[in-house]
Amino acid sequence: MQDIYAVIEGNFGKVVVRDMTQNLVTHAHSQIQLSYWLGGGSANCRVGEQETVFTDGLITACNSYESHDMVLTVPSESVIVLFLYIDVDWLDNSGLGSGKPIQFSRAQLVSTPDIKKLSAILMRKVLSSTEVDNLGVEADVKNLLRLTVEQAVTLTNVSNAHIRRPMPDYRLRLALSYMRENMACVGLMGHVAHVVGVSRSRLYELFFDEIKSSPKVIWNSIRTDEAMHRIATSEDSMAAVASQLGFSSAGNFSRFFKANVGVSPLFYRKMMTPFTRKKPQIFSIIYTSTATKFLSHQELDDILKSARQRNEKYQVTGVLLYADGRFMQYLEGALADLHEVLEYVKSSKQHCELEFREALPVERRAYKNWSMAFVSTSISPAAPLLMDREMKGFLYQSRQRA
Ligand SMILES: Cc1cc2nc3c(=O)[nH]c(=O)nc-3n(C[C@H](O)[C@H](O)[C@H](O)COP(=O)(O)O)c2cc1C
Picture 1 (cartoon, rainbow, N blue to C red):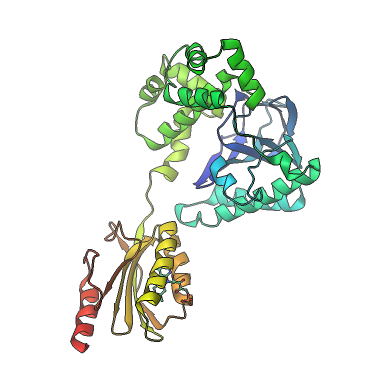
Picture 2 (picture 1 turned 120 degrees about the vertical axis):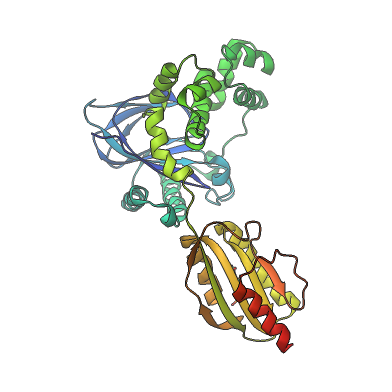
């Protein structure tokens, strides 16, 4: 069967749909990993010291840096899995743990009909995703996590105290940051023990006590994460990436990568390229409207404040002109993002008689650094006046009237 590796990335981390055709060696990630069985055969996993199975109705949860592997039950039968790789900081701020960090106390969780339904929806979104319709995935991920966390808590019947993630030992934090800064260094473990001020055996104990993984597995995971990042975001050759990460040859690097990630570095680059390099087409749209009443500076400020916050989130830029009780706004961004923002614009009670021009593709943004520049006849413009004729005419006419 052909390898599938479809991915959507977001602030939360990434969602990956994989057809697992080969075993994975013991490895770990800085991100929390949740695996939802979608179809195919089954696989056995060891997560820390627990045994889990990828099969219908079960979910496997790995905490940050918890070591895990995967062995197909029948080597010729691949297993299709939806993986969530969740950024720990994002999860801590997501409100899902009632403000407390989430730590899964069991590696094997049971799926519910709602979880199955949502993971199937996410799978379809990931497999059919194009750049513009990625929106909504973050909300789906959050819902799936909420259901999974609830399930984990109900299942294990634990209080919130059990899902707290303890702050790792400072020596462990030091060891992790040293590994990240010296990931290409051969014979690293001796150095790490020295830097942290403990013996090699104590270093291993520390890792097992705190994160149930060996320092070697963690070092490999740091190198794997970095390799994935470099392969996806740079144009460096595989040989160059191999040497940057301290591998003696591209062949060794390729074997290492395949054993940890499940696909070759070249395949990974091919799959990731559309998501990381291809920029979405930028469109611009202009509309005019009439203020429903006289707007004070404060009211205009309030509109701008909320507009800027949202535009930043959706990477929409542009300029708002206000003159003589009339607005003209120029917005630019990816089509799906523009649609999101325009919903808010249209629903505002501060203006009416909205007249939209057709959305047009643009080569590049004219207001790259402006989440919403503001120009009014009464407030001196600080924004770049890269306006087209129509916008200049709008201001000119209102000045004539004033
Ligand atoms: C003239 C005008 C321009 C706006 N521009 C934006 C914008 O660029 N991005 C955005 O997210 N919301 C925009 N909004 C919506 C406001 O940020 C805010 O959501 C809205 O004014 C609140 O609704 P309300 O005024 O009915 O209370 C705009 C609203 C108005 C009146």
